[in-house]
Length: 200
Image (cartoon, rainbow, N blue to C red; front, top):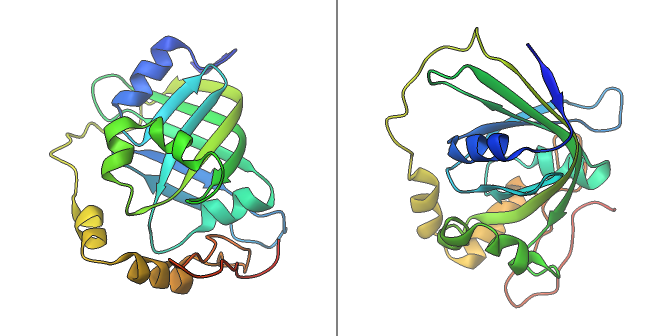
């Protein structure tokens, strides 16, 4: 049975920290804009900060819908699903903010993740912090049982092969705006004056 909690309990925090992946849902304000669901990983890149706050490292990817939607309106839902013997589904609804490398407070936010944040500094595009307004869990009776055989190292190895300039070029080409044209990842090139695609 579904249950709504007053905040992120210690039991829920311990459980979500054990999960290797989670799903993020966002949407633009436009009625005909594209709703987005993204899968996020890897272990160690999500942290419960307190009963009403969590944060995660936003790693480099082929798109940037979540960041663009958060910059526009902040609405977000994050879902964790258990694939082992405990059939749980947990959802966090709230309002998110985004800190980019070079922003005030970015390093402090990234430090929340310890070694997980440090080892992924190169591909980290941002840190997302969410003010949680609703915490609910439900049964995952229809979720299949699956085993985790390991985590992929493809993103880290992909990033390791690229210079900071090459990463900036990639983000400028692939991450500057959402599918609907909303501003997403600021284009920040080493040694250059920052500019952002679109207007805020």
